Amino acid sequence: MKGFTAAELAEMQAADEEIDREFDAAYAHCEEQKLIDKWVDELVKIDTLDARTLHRKNKQDKYAKAYYESHKDELAAKKKAYYESHKDELAAKMKAYYESHKDELAAKKKAYYESHKDELAAKMKAYRESHKDELAAKMKAYRESHKDELAAKMKAYYESHKDELAAKKKAYYESHKDELAAKMKAYRESHKDELAAKKKAYRESHKDELAAKMKAYRESHKEQRNAYQRKYYQKSKRRKQHVLSNKIQKEAS
Image: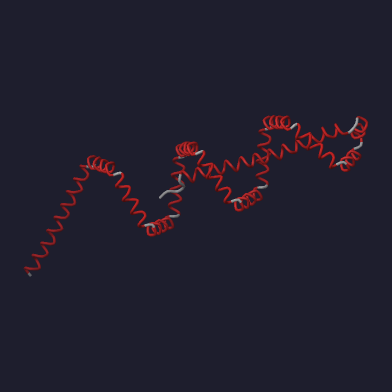
């Protein structure tokens, strides 16, 4: 009885990697946006305010805030235009920032995840439910386009975790023995004809191979088979003698 199949493990691993990539992208985008907003705000304000006003701004935060509030739409439009015209430059800066703060951002991400674990789990569950078909289609397309890569990864993972997976599989089987046996029995009953047809087709298409295997098996287990046959013959002989002896005794009495 198998636990998780290679395909199921590959699917779970791919899903984990995709979720992690989405989280990385979302977090990086959030941090990028904060930095970009900060840079662009400063650039736009410096570009918009004259030297005198800028000097006053540095001394009078209240005035700066009031100015920003009263020119919010205008500044937002300039900020957007600046971002559009400096997109590549800002993206390069953001990439450089991410590279130089990689460990810090990873630590923040981990801390954020730990402190929002339940909230994120609930959001992820809700997202999966509402995007079930879309995610299934993406996962299928991903598996198809990465078939060889996933098979290689899965094989490598299985090889390096062989004992661990075998132990988990055994533990799962032991704790679900009756349930699995019932499911298997029900499956065999409901697919009886289909399974018989597959078995027959397999025997037909592998006739020579199976015959060769059977011959090799008989050759390598010859002594064992002979010993078993002798034992069976002697046991059968004793049984017949016992029956015959009983019959003679009954007839004599």
